[in-house]
Amino acid sequence: MNEVKRRAISVIIGVVCGIAVMLLLLALFSFIIAKSGALNRGIMMPLALTAAIIGAFAGGAVSARISGSAGLIMGSICAAVMFITLMVVNMFIGTMPGTVSLLRSAVMLISGSAGGILGVGGRHSR
Image (tube, rainbow, N blue to C red; front, side, top):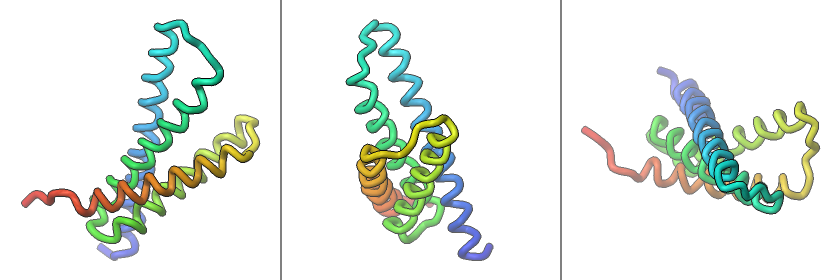
């Protein structure tokens, strides 16, 4: 398989896995908030940011693991695509990007890069 095609496929799979992890965490956080009855607007943004960080990390790790090399680059690309996807979805919902988006993009890029590095540097099976 062509190297560029293999890396593109690894980014797509990483983005899908990262967004799936993010959605699962958001569902878990929603369930916990609903059961505890502690619906507080102040807690929603940190939980959403936590889900984005963990999702970007997972997506970067999966992307780099599939690619097999260039973990920092693959993780960064995966996190950037995830962030752009989230921004497009937010614009369709009606939420315009603001200063929180800059924070989210920075932490997602750092998290995705770290996931990519650990994804490539992890134990390889034989």
